[in-house]
Amino acid sequence: MVDFEKHLKENRDHRVEAKKECAAFYRSSIVAMYKVCGFPEDVCGSCKRKIWFVRTKTGKACPYTNDGISHFADCPDAAGFRKGESAMKWENPKGQK
Image 1 (cartoon, rainbow, N blue to C red):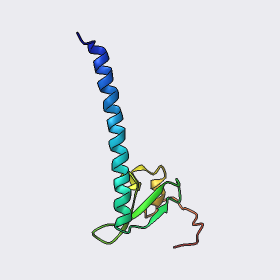
Image 2 (image 1 turned 90 degrees about the vertical axis):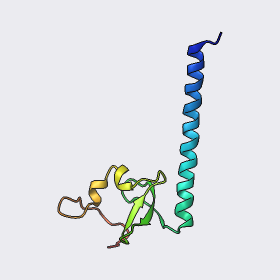
Image 3 (image 1 turned 45 degrees about the vertical axis):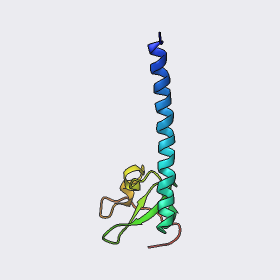
């Protein structure tokens, strides 16, 4: 007879490892796609996370992370990059406009 609780734990541990491996493969695939497509790599001026600027259909550059999501969604200081009066003012160390 199989110890059911032990079997469940082993399966759960296996699923966790499989999810980690899939996530790592997904991230490496996203980064490879960014590089193959020629999207410029940069570092967020606020949180210092590695980002790539992907061109949208309208021609605007949008920052994306290696997780394949918009960096506006996961940057802790995203509000500082919004346009308009509500935006925080950032220093521009490179003097760019």
